[in-house]
Image 1 (spheres, rainbow, N blue to C red):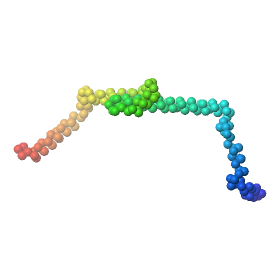
Image 2: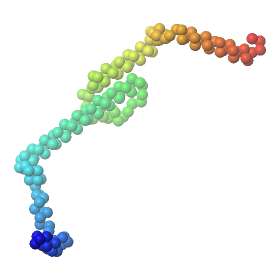
Image 3: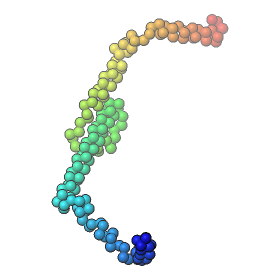
Image 4: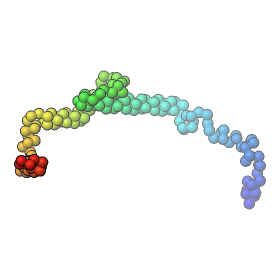
Length: 159
């Protein structure tokens, strides 16, 4: 009971922030970040160096991946004869000349290219004809011929 009364009445100026209560906050936050992390100065410096090195590695890997993607986009633009992008070329230059497109992506692009070349050639067109259903093709042809005849008979009085 005495504690409750003392805490209620206590020091009336401490709650107002006019002084007296600020000493505890200054002691709670040490000025040295190594002490705040619970390490010695040398450990803290080594930890900071490791963090910086890891960040540099991540940034380099990220830049390399971006350059790989830019290289792939350049290859696709060349393949489909699309306009070049300066942004992709700048990305490749920033990463250096050792940027290559991953093998899986190259395989995918090559497969697409061979499929398209096959479709564009004369042999590809002949193979497409072999795959078509001839009965269905004959029905469509005869339907269009009869349709043309009926339209011609309607318009021409001689027939």
